[in-house]
Length: 158
Image 1: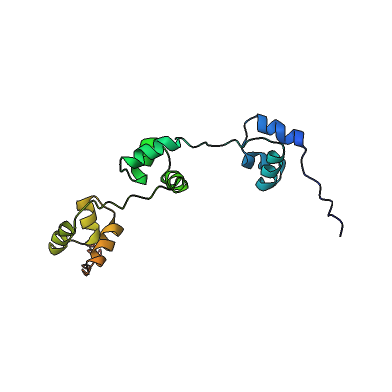
Image 2: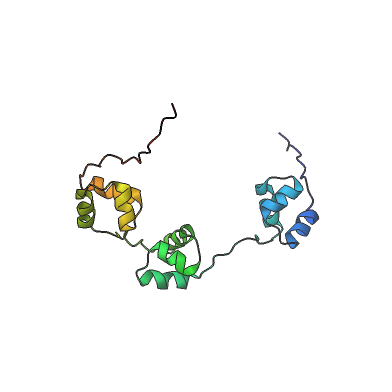
């Protein structure tokens, strides 16, 4: 069966001109009315490196902060990168994640729960996420208190 004879929607010169203006593959694709993957494939065939964000840190910087015991979130803040970028690079380097650090103790959670506080109030008190409090409470086998609803008095106009 012969090839389908598909024609490209743009010329190499058109792609190069937009590339030289600093446009990303996505932007070039929109301007040329082509798929981003088509633009990427042609750019690569022409030997042009992708424009785009480069990693804002070196492997050495990541390793040094990891060796200091910092967590991905802390490393990301230190390096001005996203937590996902840090995680992906850490995995690529074969570095194990440091364990999750609890910002409160079981005793603190139990004491506040015994005061009758609900998860939201405990989270606010401890500076933690409500889901973190809920998860730890459940692991400890502690039942949730009922939700506190803010009651508003409605006056009748009759």
